Image (cartoon, rainbow, N blue to C red):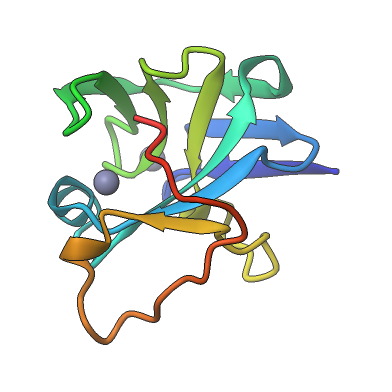
Amino acid sequence: MERTATCVCGQLTVGCKGEPARVSLCHCLACQKRTGSTYGIAAFFRREDVELKGRARRFMRSSDSGYEVTFHFCPDCGSTVFWEPHRKVDMIAVAVGAFADPAFPPPSQAVYEEHRHPWVSIIHPSRPASPLW
Ligand SMILES: [Zn+2]
Ligand SMILES: [Zn+2]
């Protein structure tokens, strides 16, 4: 299986081999700000299974866990396509929406549930939830 995530204008792409190690939905307020939506959703792939192409700008912020995260977004259209959780340096998080594929594997966990908008469905995790950043 090979999938490609792209920004809206298409110049920044991430090719991903195999299935994601984890798909995680995040209700935190920083993800709400970043996406302009009510949650963020990330697919985690091993770094060696990911191929990055195109130009990106970076934005680094610390997370509630105290680790930093570096977000990479397209300088032309502004889409965040992937990010690097410093807590898990062997992994790349790819924005699930950037695959534009409704058949993409669903999230297996949700974190920062306390910030969930009440109309967003509750994820019933297949394993205990833990933030990866
Ligand atoms: Zn773009
Ligand atoms: Zn978040």
